[in-house]
Length: 342
Image: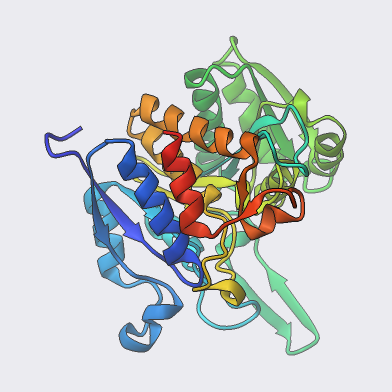
């Protein structure tokens, strides 16, 4: 920690992004940890003026400060500019996507006893976006890339994370029964890396079976490590186990650089209406504090969120159907309630 605290790149994002990142910023500042913010707009909102959703100034800021808190950014389906999220991960080599899923009290839709972490490889697989039409409007083709280097570092990241955070099991998730060469390589590397961690149990699951197991008994799993596409799908499934994307924090981590963000979308239909649930953004901020080795402050934030949910006195619109007896509040009022419990 520097004498004057930490400087964090803040990327407000699109839609509800500015609202939920403002809420997260207020909660983080209320912990007393000295934080300075380098605000860098990105996404659809900057396209008209700058001609790109991800200006170089944003990348330079993140490289300079080494840590960022980011709101959701709109990505058009099937057309438009390439995903800013994918571009950030690629350009900054944020190779590890971290998605904790932990049951919180007072969330009626959450499965009890869930406490797992999904570790997803972020830089290759189908998401490299190498695709083309073979026959226009009739056939298309995509390339799936798997390398030893990327597989080894993501599996090692998962084991190191498990060791540092007192977790005891890593499960490699794959489809090597069908994708024998690409996922076969991933699985071979996972087995090699696992040998260096005899203190951590290692097991394997085929991805479709893994999805079924998470529905049936999620409490049996600890850390999951997956290739890119499978990790994207399973991490959202895991979010469903704890009540939805509004409760799910996330991080994208590389060597010396990390970007923290809620995993939900930009929700343009409720943007500017003070209706968005800020909890995922706030918990992403807690992940950021933990990354900065401010564990005590991170614990306080997480405990404050849990206390507000357990009391059930106030809820945002997405949780109101589960707790109709609670007072319906807006984004910033929810942040106020969490701050009051710090």
